Image (cartoon, rainbow, N blue to C red; front, side, top):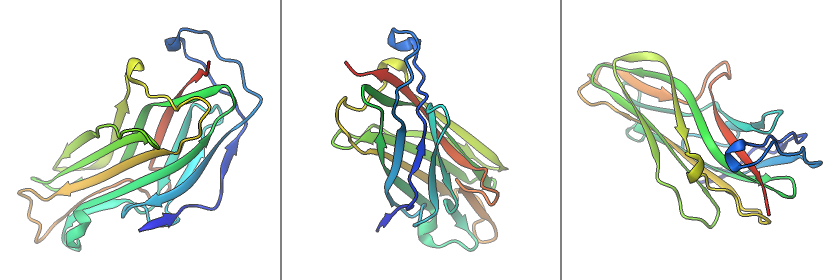
Length: 213
């Protein structure tokens, strides 16, 4: 079911940074600001009102915080709970004369996996109207009862920038899967989250910027 996202739009003053990877010095600070609107949220891992987006003060990253992203198997689980997903549809308004790409993404959460159980976090990214990228996946094996972290990194040569002069929504698909494997699912529960009761578990997407011709 397609769910309308948060009503609040996050805005910050622009302070974009350049990168020598694109063959130039630091970029000048644009007079305009970056604005990210959460257009829609779709998925079992992010019911309405449980995913929030904030932009870093220097505009080099944005953070997505989840409060209800949990996949689990075993005691207390429904058959569909082994897999949870979330698709974020973002409207990213950038200062005129600039474009951006996702350079890397840091994912964090908590995992309790029994002996024999395993979990997977995976994600892909694409601009509206462009082909979807392949998923990048990270596997975790039990036994573990600890915070987890995974990073997707894009080589500079492989960065996909938003088309200059166009506003295309940016889509992020994430997924958590837990497999019981040889664990005792009749008496134990294994789970992975991308959420936290104290609000410290989040996902950070790092941006690369360059001038449009």
